[in-house]
Image (cartoon, rainbow, N blue to C red; front, side, top):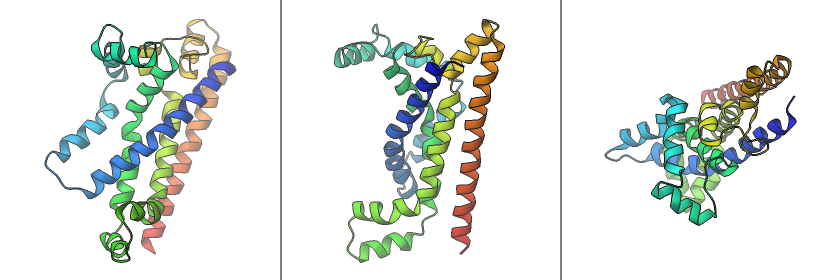
Length: 223
């Protein structure tokens, strides 16, 4: 068992959730309540990482974050070093590829809130920000929790994008999925089996949590 890779994987999953959820809540709420020209295009753009092969996305991120590109050079100047082959780089990549897993359940939760609930909040004198904080987010909480579970579980098993932009640097970018791959390549099947079992357990627990929250949300709407 590669405990360094395990710790790095949990760290990546945790920070991905912490950073992506505020973005996802704002974006999901905007997509749920606003009607505008090009909305379908924006939703398709958000969902693109879900269907795009991870290696393709990883390739474009590798090119974009490379110090030879304008964006990569700007980021390297801003951060004092390039993003490629660093923890910060795989964290940014993780946020991008997990965006649809975060946005979709939260958007559905916001869409399930009856418009008259928001109208009642406005009539009561609540501002849009207060309505979001005190009414909408509590009602959408099962969707937010589902997004957290999905993003956390998906980050634990992410491989293609991480390998493309981060490589396999111990303690820096070598997460468990890559450690499993390296273990199989080196014929350390016992280590690979243990790490695979750990990821399987985490993923199964996340799926159970998502289904429980979805059932709770359905029961709440039924009552």
